Length: 349
Image (cartoon, rainbow, N blue to C red; front, side):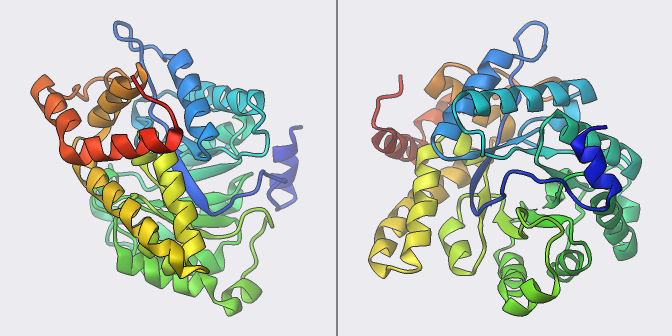
């Protein structure tokens, strides 16, 4: 029996690589142009690139087109990412994997498969298919994450992304209740972009009374409050949040990591704040512009910068040529690229 199975049967999560505040990147899944098979060399190279910049990978999330992947493909990607991280000496860097499915049953299947493949944590979104029924049922939503967290062999992170879940948008009270009632829930990713919600949750979670009264099931898995974009990273850290899972880190990993470092430092040393604010402004503008082009735009920019990227899996279309040119030439994009080149200390061809 696998160690993860033993942990699940004993009612405790197994030892996992520590989950820490910081920057995480939802890794795109790259496909071969004619067959749409997995392009593993590009995927592996990209995982290594962002990890060396100090950014932790999230596999099979929305940016990774999880909805377009088979169970077996998700397993292949997680195994490949773990092999890459171990191979470049980052054996202690964890992997978060998306495991939200169409039903609670499938979500649990994906969760157990992800853990067996090497994921240390899972990121779980609500299904969009019956969103009309689920969105109005607080009880059903709470039951979903409660059951998944109770039966998962690894800690579970809530993924709140209305745009990918049929408009389902958890409020701060429900998320805080889940944090209190479910010791195997290790955090939340707020791709709703609601800074007020983030502030309320972070304030509750950071209070000493919460930590004392609601310890986590796994000591390596504290409850992290993470934004879903880079455009409010500095303000969020001053509100006691813990970082971000942001698609922009695929394009400018050194810059986003530097912003996190400066923002954390500025909480103790205000002299660091002006530089953090300068970088935050650059990345906020880039995030605003690039996010509007979604997965196809992100992949296009990766192609321009690093030589791989390609198109999404059908039926998602590639970015039109005219829009791609405009995106690359946009001053917000170019300013961020310039910053990334400066921080990575090399010219990107």
